[in-house]
Image (cartoon, rainbow, N blue to C red; front, side, top):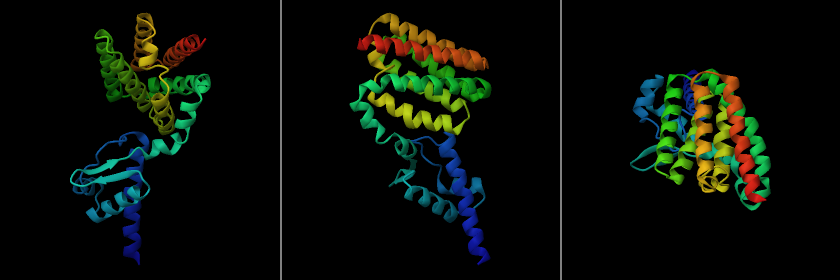
Length: 237
């Protein structure tokens, strides 16, 4: 009986550690888990314990095994919140203003905490994505700009070191980007000045975050969302 309880306790411990990785972004959607042997060594348990924890997460739709390839993280956390929002947003473009109002609050706060908490790895990731955005802009690659833009905002959410900010970003804002080109390729195609201003705004946000200036980061992010909002509203008039 004691042995059974101990085994169950070890499985629960591994399960919690894997769940933490899913929540804090260290195991993002699409990531491949280390081999069972490596996880067993890392957590100081048997491979059977690791296997059972993985099977339990797979049963909840959070992990998926691919024959011959390994175990991968699904987008289960994201779709759990996003659906059926995706179709509603696609069918009701009038929701754009509400969406941008929500983004102003959420991403402003996310930028604030990212500026407070970003470590060296976060700053390097943000700087690399800004450089990617700069290169796409120089090459007039609007689709590339939009992609780098999305990844940059996700990196900022990751740098906040707040699981709820990260989860809301990947679950809701990530889904919105798929259905509304409010600051993707569509917005950048309005004119060259729009694209240039978006890049300048991202520079300001990144500089404030990497410089650990929280209030400046929040203000810069809110100014960015306000600009997007004005351009979207102007495009609809």
